[in-house]
Every structure is written in C-alpha cells, then in structure tokens.
Image 1 (cartoon, rainbow, N blue to C red):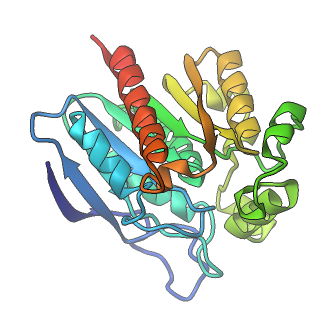
Image 2 (image 1 turned 60 degrees about the horizontal axis):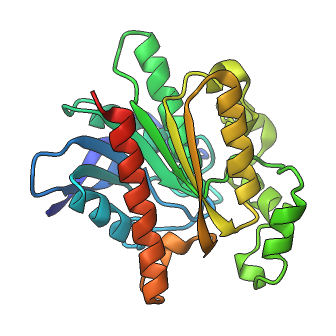
Length: 286
C-alpha cells in the first residue's frame, strides 16, 4: 500500500473570503491510499463527526481507508471543509462532490461512501455526480456505501431502537434535540441555506433519490441514528434503487472510530469493511 497527500481543485475558487463560506474549498485536501496491486474500484470516503468535527487521522478515516486499500480498493479520503460559524452547508458536501468528480477520471468502478455525517455528504456527492452524468459531463457513481448514516433532521420514532439505546451514556445518544442542533449548526440561517441550494438527503423527493446508484447501508445496533438509516433504505427501495441493508450486532454509533478499544471492536470494524467489500464486488461484477 502507498499513502500520499494530494489536493483536488475545489468548488470555491471565486469565493468572497469575507462572506460565509457556502461554496466549499478552493483546494480540497485528500489522503490517497493505493493498494499494492491494480485497484478493482475507486472509493471516495468521507469521515463522520456531526458535520463539524473529524480529521484524516481519525480511525474512521485512516484505519478504514487502509482496510479498503488492503482489499484492493483505491481510496480518496476527503478532508472536507467542516461546518463552523463561518462555514455552512452546502460547502462540506460540495468538497466531497469535487473529489468524486476528480476520482471519476480514474479507470474502473466509482464508489461514494462515508460514515455518519460523512455518509450524508456522500449521498449528496453521488447526486451531484448523477446530475453531471445526466448533462453528459461525467460518469455517475456505480455504487454508494453508507455506514451508520444520519440522513434526516427529524427521525421517525422507533420503540425497539429506543429500548436498545436507553442505557447508553449520553455521549453515545442521538436524541431529537441533539440531531436538531447538529443540522441547525450545519445548515445555518434557513433562508441563506435554501438560497445556496443546501438540502437534507432524507427530505429529498423520490425523483431525486431515484438517481442514486445501488446502495449498501450498515447500521450500528444500539444507535438512535439507526432509525434514519432504515428509513432511508425504505425511501430508496420505493424509488427502485437496489439496497442492501445490514446491522452490525452489538455495536454503537461511531464504532469504526474505535477499532483499538478491544479485540471485539477491531473485529466489528473489520467485519463491516469486509461486508462492504463483499457487497461491492457483487454490485460491480461485470
């Protein structure tokens, strides 16, 4: 495996530096993971962190990318612009979309993916790529992989999930108030967000979601956000998008970011990557 740092031209070359950044980065930092042998697919991967945290050194970015590269996948791990007081949606997703567009120039199948909030950004990037493909500018993503995604500002109630998460420590919970605060900070002023074209993936109409490629979703077991992943899977199926859905037993949200906690934690994380690889090979098989 070879690992290198590169930059991809971003969407914000003409951005006013004094304004709230809703465009993205002029140059998007990327960590590129090249497998030892010729890759059978290219993955653009976005870490999680509630849209406002995370680095390329997080295990959810670095450890996961190394495991995909070990399995023969070329990985672009994206250091997208994080939401702050001066950076708001759709800037983070625009950065991921810019990297996906650049990665589409590589030979072989193209995959978008991410974890938690990064999974949300991966969905938006895949839709942006589908729009380019519809205009004849680029090819679409061939598959989408989502790990414990958050895709809705308001989640449907699920008594079974609530029962499994009731005893978790508060830092592991995603109640309605925390989810609302996360999206509120990411989107910022509603009028400005709407004017900039910021959207929430799970609120998009069926005709938009129908543009997504075959999708694999892995949810954590005891995770409030599991309700969002399961609802999104239903939304996609209703539009005709093929979906493979699974739950990693005995896990909580963010477990890909903690593979060193225990042997069980490492095994859960590795099993998840292995599942994604297995399902991708089935989707991408000629």
